[in-house]
Image 1 (cartoon, rainbow, N blue to C red):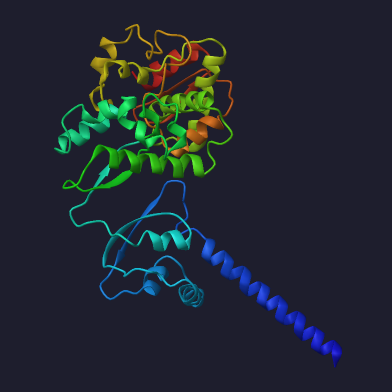
Image 2 (image 1 turned 120 degrees about the vertical axis):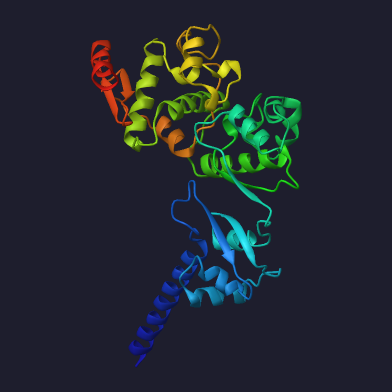
Length: 339
């Protein structure tokens, strides 16, 4: 009889432990899968409860009821669309406090863009006077007040590489440059710092990594897979390490304050041998700073670059990449795939 009681006690303990473990996993699980970069837009319908809202993203009705019983929200749920960063259940509910206003517009800033592209886009939408965004993010006195909230810009003289490329909700009626910059810095912290992509690095090392990543971002193509991006990063790093010129056309226009959208073949040819601290066709080593705002995937590929025997690469007209070990190989690839 005593043995039976002990057995039952152990069974109860094991079942309670399993239940607690599953509940703990439930409340700490992410609300989406590719959490490094994705944002969910959740639509709450009129009459929806917090239980409905949670079940849109989680699949356990039992654990949902238990969580809400133990942690009742202290606000009313409103119908509307919500911009949800991937996070645990507590943060998910916190982000249900304020829906995106109906007048909000979803504005996308692309991965290979620089601050001049962002400025041009905002000006074209009549949100700013042309040049206002560029002036703000390159004037330390303008963004000095943000340094207390974002430690990683404490020594920054420009915010060029901290403005994470993504889609943002912008309300034209209440738009301010500072609000947008705060959103972009917060997303950089989420995607790059908090995700662990960059950790245990000094400010100079981080600057070098992001500078190289910004070049890789513009030199790689969307059709390239992560391994190919890592190989491109490895080739460019090798050129620097062996005292070659990086020789990336993507760096040519930056010193002239041109948006990527305005840096076409004629501009590249015009400034091809212009002597400035960004043009890697002229200078040896790294440019003086980043030339764009790279995405997390490219930063990760740059940090974890892949070594190869190659020193050259090019993309053909179908955006397929071709490598060369020597300049002769590179010339053959140009003759075969680009002419």
